[in-house]
Image (cartoon, rainbow, N blue to C red):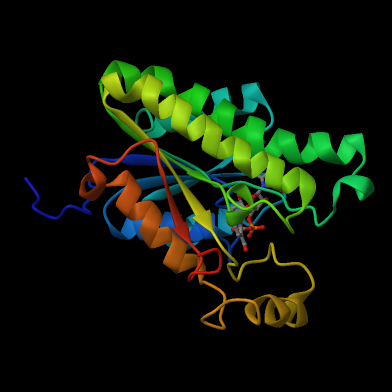
Length: 249
Ligand SMILES: NC(=O)c1ccc[n+]([C@@H]2O[C@H](COP(=O)([O-])OP(=O)(O)OC[C@H]3O[C@@H](n4cnc5c(N)ncnc54)[C@H](O)[C@@H]3O)[C@@H](O)[C@H]2O)c1
């Protein structure tokens, strides 16, 4: 038996939103695979998910996944089971950004953000939990945001969705603890991914507000996800790790 607490050999990780080459989900997929897991890249057909999986190699597969759709989750889990077995790890990383306050946000826009960022996380957990419960083990990481812990100055629908992710994480962790399932969240600050719209000028503006003067890299958030899905965090559940270089401190 391995003494490496970060060893994921034998684990099967389903990662939503991992089809963005420069994104956090792809960084998790690469890192989890390096640590021995087989990884399922779940993302929209229009994403770079096939390329991300091909770059990782035999330990990765791409599945088309729309996190807002219950049937799509069922198909992704079925495809995972057919290839390798039931997911023992789920990372709910898919997300969309909307830089608008309440006055500018239409009902349709609000519902879109909630559908992906909130309902997508619920549906993901619901899709994998029966098998995890049967197995008596499992680890789930949900990507929230500092927008989920900070009141003022955040985009309205996005912040609402990310607060909800923490609520679901805490409640589900409490409910599922007795089945050996751990559920935690990460609240990243500014991370240099394609989600930062507007390119370098916007990134530099955001970086000017961070005490360290730089955005985080996707790999720096992925290493926290690795901790949370590995044995290294065996007594950690129902909480969140804020990774923002003291932005909200
Ligand atoms: N980048 C940041 O500064 C930052 C900060 C805090 C939290 N986050 C969160 O981190 C997570 C990852 O974002 P990222 O920074 O890697 O951005 P990204 O844009 O690179 O990746 C997001 C991925 O989600 C996918 N996605 C969107 N809608 C989907 C749907 N309906 N079904 C399946 N996949 C869908 C996209 O195709 C994309 O591959 C998101 O939840 C985001 O809200 C990002």
